[in-house]
Figure 1: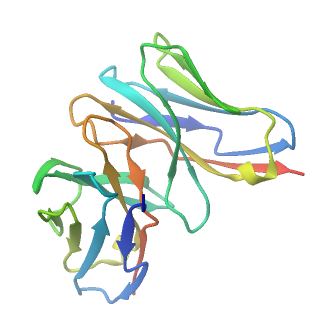
Figure 2: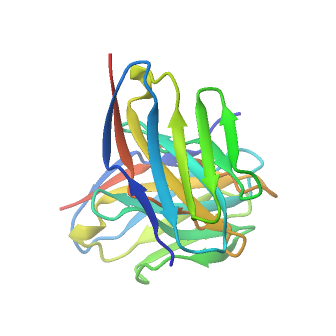
Length: 113
Length: 112
């Protein structure tokens, strides 16, 4: 019940295209869903996050779509750029033990120029 | 504001030794969490400290321990190192009243 399943494991997108990464969770106590971006040799950087009271959140080229009934959420990167090439992690946490982030396995995104 | 800092950045230890890693949170952040990142297991929560008290603990053996000081700086210790402890150890800090966690660059521990 603590798992967060992320797909795909790797993704190749052409420059200017849309990158889509999906995550699914089982624990209905989760109420905070962030996405992190990690470059080689660096720590994960918080990209965008959503709470379940909204179905979508947009920040620049990054959008989270959230489907509470399906227990799924996804990250969309519009107009993908080579600089977006990184590993992306979805995560989830609940109000009990709020700081225990449960992470997906990660998606290695490559944007071809 | 300066980000989360971790020292040392790289460490090589021998099996059976112990190691101490240090984390300085973002100024004003009182919550510090530790995570282990490996290629096989991904990112896994180790423990969280707030105001010098451990508030949450992940599913790791007792060889993994931590503490937090009054200035919010935190250390984690791993005793009797095993080869499988080779990993990137990440520290994250959080401002009070929010869920947002900000990660440091990590300490790359190699156990030989």
